Image 1: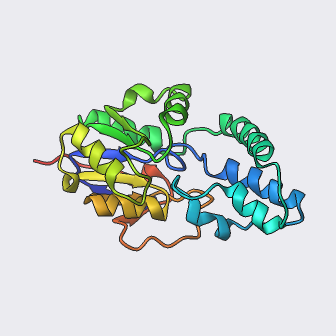
Image 2: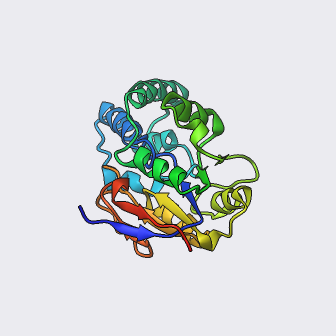
Length: 219
């Protein structure tokens, strides 16, 4: 196994798609919804949405593609229910728990920087026994715009009392990479099935799993 080595003073994790693959279930459910109307939704057409919550709702685009009014709320609720059922079965991604444990062994403060709401991030972390592993959890609110804006990473570093240039971000998407780099953090990309075909110019490294990330202590 090839490894990459870093010496951060803190580590900040994205949540969706990075800690848990919560990106594939909604895509599959929405893809199925498109198919109900005889339409095809490709992974490539969906990727620009990954890690973002500031775009218009996907049901608006579906309605435009269909070319007639739809009961968008009924569709949204149906897809949300299916997505939640699929997400419940998603495990923590390979290598993440081990990386968190290594950070703890070195005494590195940890944070989550997410564009999703606390109502989504917190229970999903708790369900997998990871909520208490983090010293700070930054989620979407009125003062924290969605990635690729850097605000969530800047706020996470502020809460950890660490200079962003001394922190390492763990991400899975291009929008997350842009956010981390704009905030000044080095960023390691751990692609998931939804982002595996993307390019990540500017990343400090792209690895298959978080197990490939080695940490050392600053002397």
